[in-house]
Image (cartoon, rainbow, N blue to C red; front, side):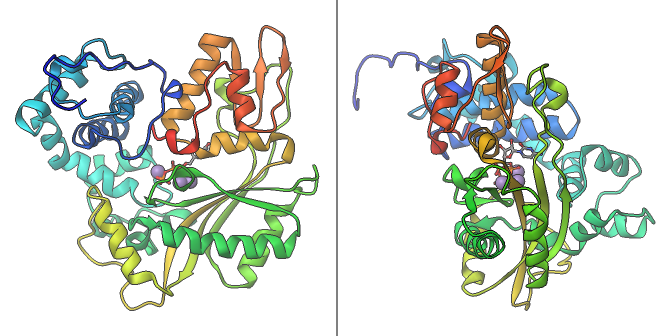
Length: 387
Ligand code: CTP
Ligand code: MN
Ligand code: MN
Ligand code: MN
């Protein structure tokens, strides 16, 4: 490979992210970080289509098995729109992209990032506040807006929740969750999902999928788990949503049902520091795009614990493989898998089931491997799903 005198051939790359192995962080971090800013900026503007185009470019570049050295190497690659190509060219030639730099320093992007960084605040709410001239937490607090319970917790633990969760902290939370789950239902299984299952070294939360090998035993489990966590004083906030999913003849995974309907709980855990200060500092350094808070709010200063976002999802064993696939991510990988299913196989994939529209029936699966096989896709391990 080294010192090859002929120009390298174009990379070979499939067009759907679910056809590729995408490790973290990849060989083109300068490019992927830049495209991620533009994607995020579009998403914060409510421009989903534009956001998706940048996410696809970002995902493609992360999947390449070596560093792109010049624009010529991009020829023949899928997923790169004109806009992304211009940005990439700029970065390759100048080391920076003026568009990305301008975006990062724009008041709108900064304010929207800060406001959506509050747990419980989505793009729509943040946009409304920004339009009213609210750009900081201090301005929000003096604005007189009434905040819901989630947002109040979001403000209270703002600093902690914007400090990335380290792998060590995720492991500590795993121990807590497993202890509680096994005490309320022996035999139940707890699986780490989300970014940490994909091998990421830090994340914005910790995601768990919980099931029991006997179908039906998981019913009502979420409430027992929450009650036990609360009795042990481990929860700072929780919001539980009940399951309403039923297989329907219409098929799973339709646009209207893309939001899954498992028993789930968005929560904030109280994680006691045993070895935490160093870990959290290290994790902070790994995330250059972290929102910095000017005024140290209810900071982590001096407290022997810190707040950590945790998602708990309970699935019946019959849907477990679909739930695990759906809750492992990345978001783009999931999205691409669903797009592949519909467009290339006439199937509907959701976190609950896989429906074959031609055969008009659900396809069972008890492992992620079987789902990939049903879809005619080569298996991609969790660590390769970082699209
Ligand atoms: N997810 C979902 N439905 C939601 C929220 C999340 O299906 N309402 C899925 C997402 O598609 C994603 C996974 O759950 O694949 C984890 O989501 P999230 O925790 O937001 O992202 P991570 O990939 O874990 O990254 P991070 O480190 O930022 O948490
Ligand atoms: Mn996560
Ligand atoms: Mn996230
Ligand atoms: Mn999550």
